[in-house]
Image (cartoon, rainbow, N blue to C red; front, side):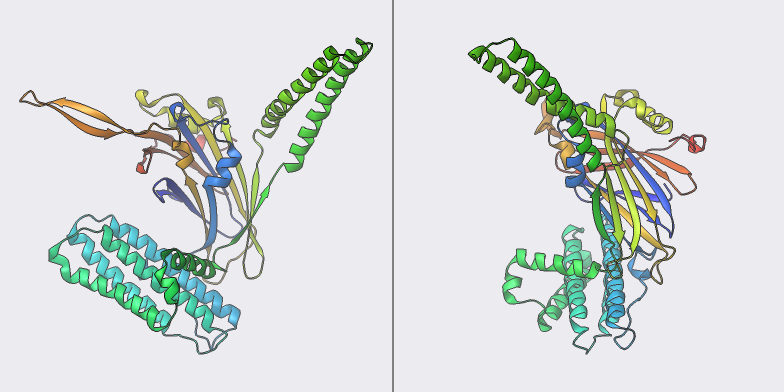
Amino acid sequence: MNNLTLTQDENLSIKVSYQLLPTDHKRLDLYFSLPIEMGIGPQTLTEEHYFHSSIENHSAYYSDQMHLPLVRSRFISQKKGQIRDYRLNLNLFSYQILIALDNDIKQTIKLKESEEFYPQAIVLAEQIISLLKKLRRYTPPDKKLRPFFENADNYLSWQVEQSFLKLLSRGPKSSDFSAERNFLITLCRSENEYRQSNQYNSQITLDDPNRITNKMRLLQRLIEYGVVLQKDVKSLNRNLKRVVRGTVTAVIMAFVMVLVLNARANFAEVTIALVAMLGVIYGLREIFKDDITRVIWRKIQKGLPKWKHIYTNSFNKVTIANQTIWLEYIRDKDLPKVVDKLFQTRRHQNKQAARLLHFRSDTKVNVKSFMPGYDEIQQRIYFNLTPFIRFLKKGEGRLYSLESNNKVTKQAVERRYQINLVVMYTDRQHRRQAQRFKITINRSTIINIEAMENNEDIDEYIDED
């Protein structure tokens, strides 16, 4: 898909990202086809629980300069602008370095051959050294600005060291590239010594891995201030749910009172039989009240949005965008035609019984322009798949084979499961793109994410809701 990317984030999470222009309006639909054997449904995993525990939305100013060679300096010296401008530009520059470094490190780790890995790693090291020099060239003498610089410098230095140590630990080992490896190790040591010489972190903090990690997370949030949009989550239909609950309770209570009055009329005085009958009536009320309320509420809220995100600028508190969220289990007949056709392109043996979970996001940008130098904001949505695998079978299977010498051998094989996912993206002109993905997982990680070829022209479904 041209305007949207779906990638693996962590071991059991995926990330969907797309860009938004000023006054833009985008709709995103994800249809998860979860095999019945996974045991996922409204009874085992409610929409509300999955949304609050496993779906994370993230919106920030975006530039297409997302790799280290393309990072543009938005950093200004302390002699220009006010404190607010200094901090904002410092955060913008630092944040862009972090995003670019993370992207390039991930791409380099994928290189499995030493002849490709180490030259690329050296290029990244040289580029990050240049960017850090550019940052430290403007060390502010002003005491009011100094804390902002030290926080950013401390975190960037630590993150650079951690990123290249991660690169070295996961990269291929080869004695032919010992010079390159030593160069990367020297970079990590020099950054560590740089932080020590500036006394950025106390020895007590350095001696405790938990303390230093939590401190760096705090510094990361400080760097994101002004760049990552502040999010406020609101639950929709709350008053409607109260009305439904109250109405159901009133109807049941009226019915119960009729039964109580009839029972009282049939008994001249209070007896054990009357008390028992009243107990049964009130017990039945408690049994059926919640069930009836739940069924009626699911019918009423079907197709209604459930949450709303309001994104604001951290500095001036201006509302930048609004995002409305739908999340519900649906039936096969509720699928749009284009989505159903994409699911039908699966091979016959893969068309197993499945539960469908639909996520929808409508995002509308309210402002006509962004910060100077930024023409877009990026919307990133993270889906943690861990709740989907909690009912999967544990352990490994065995594959037996007969060798040519009549010897029986066995191999351990892991159980894998397949989630089919259709992503549909609709822009402000109501043009749609749809793509089916095949996600292969086991109990501990995502094995593979494969984008399947699309054979459907979806323009004919442009007016379909």
